[in-house]
Image (cartoon, rainbow, N blue to C red; front, side, top):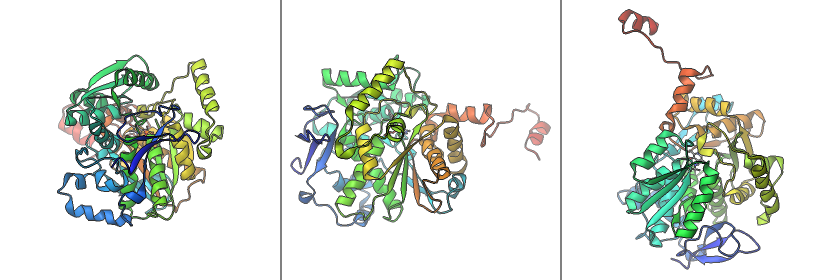
Length: 447
Ligand code: F0G
């Protein structure tokens, strides 16, 4: 297997390549991001996407049941003996006319890809199953990550399934309780650092480098291979038709990077005829990508990214003591590690970036609760972003749009309860407090 897949540095001036049996989380030659690449001619790739439908018939086999591994021919970096699955990727693509109406799109055009249905309640399981398969392949004993919550929950679940030690670094007071409770319950050593996600990310890299722990943040290129399958399932849900737009929240920018890679590869393989456009949505309080892409016009330029401009941007954040702040705690990140790969995805997908304020995220989240399956705040940035892009006329009412709902509604109940009980916003649904008296209860019911 190792000959038909390899790791490669994304920097065009470097392009160093490495065996998939190595675990590096940055190019050892130049420090840039690594990709997993395939020699497609040597791999047996089906000649149409609908071929994957055959695996529904053999879903009594765990790898065919997995919504990630039933597409394993498109992420073929390890053998079956290393692949681990806990049944991830059983997700739903829901046509949602209530949301279409809310965002001013035509009926029949807006779909929600609900990744909250994964075993740990977020899209992270798609990537984690792939990263842990690689971790098993290289004989890992101890895995680690920095997290705004969902990565740590997912890591902890896969680690105990694989019998590995796990350590998670989280910003003290920075993650929603649903997520913290998962990491603790699943048995991860949980290090609460007095700092934010960006601080944790820096520290976990130091520890992994110095102590040889296996890093499962999305710097890990194998993780992103698993996240490509979210797009395969979207296409499958649309009868293998390509939508006009994919709208996704942007935090550490792993998903957007993986989606761009997925579509680039499918096009290269002749499995799709056109690539959908990608919209990445930042929260206004954590808007590095928006600032760089839309305000400073930073582009991938075939790999020749302006590193100096990125360094200067981060130096300015340091100098001003800037800290990101948003109620969408999952995407409260100002130094996204996959920035360059996301810029590449935006190039591949002719993408746009926008920012949405917390108030709009809250309303969009409540709309998803009212009309759909519910989601956590960060996920609703996609719906708030679609609403904005409709207002701006970037997306047309009759275009087909898929919003990725990245995490489960129950991840962050505090925000939901506060919105409905303490706030007076568009969808607030105030609970009514009544004495324990039948007449008053009936009156409160308006009967
Ligand atoms: N939505 C949710 C629910 C998330 O948990 C995250 C990231 C994102 C969106 C952003 O995705 O990083 O691929 O751009 N959560 C990470 C974590 C950072 O630690 O759980 P991205």
